[in-house]
Image (cartoon, rainbow, N blue to C red):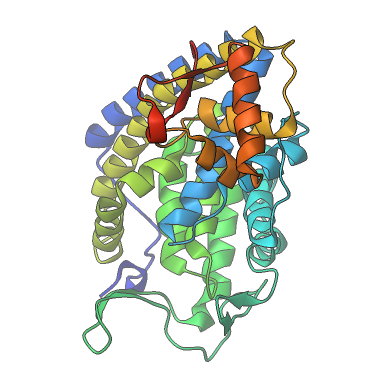
Length: 366
């Protein structure tokens, strides 16, 4: 039996004595993070905001096994928010749809969540009307008479069913109850409401596909309400991805349990706390990048150099060689070497100790 098969299944209960201390820790940590960000300059806040939204969009998709181009995601977000960004690149329809969904949820967090708004999010995720090779119902609930919506794992013929969602006939009524609760006044702390909404929506599983990404967008929407700010400085999706196995275990346990969701709330709060902890490391990187660009505010860079310097300050993987420069910027080896030598002359790059065929370069004083 699944929880949604119980009478009045959404009348969730929990042990307040167990949950409230962890909620207090999370709320205190949120206040510290927001306080630190508020003390920084606007440009640094803007960069941290852009970093977090980029991380949130890419990691939310990665949970579903979809790899988005981070440069395209970052450029799309910056363009939509009016943030100046050197080396902007055009984004594909897959990227634009996910970005549109996330920004609508977080930037308009205080507005009413309606059926039409959810349908718009779903249509943005699947602009071609297909999920991979398969045509799906887009911008509407799962159609009546469709196959059961199941979460399964295992090889073909030996599948294990972890969860089966409510029948499609139930979805409109279930979603009406969910939206009424979601839009109601603050009877529950918004952080706890985010945890409950996450479990509730993903249990209904109202769409043919995209339920996970929309669930995490709703979570971010309620966390923005908790922060009373559209600016995002921590990524719950990135932390869920880091704890993906535990996440699915906790969901399965809650969906196969009774209406007592104490364990789910505790896991969610601990995951959120870890996301807030990680933000402090992200902030250190943002500050280092800001100092770098401030030092070189008057240094002229061409478009290729801007692209590569942004990648280097974002944490470039491996060693930088002229061959990698040429491949990433789609230019010749000679042009790549001239770009690098120009940056060395300007005191931006330096050659690492090893020479010969393994010659590599790194930023100075980041």
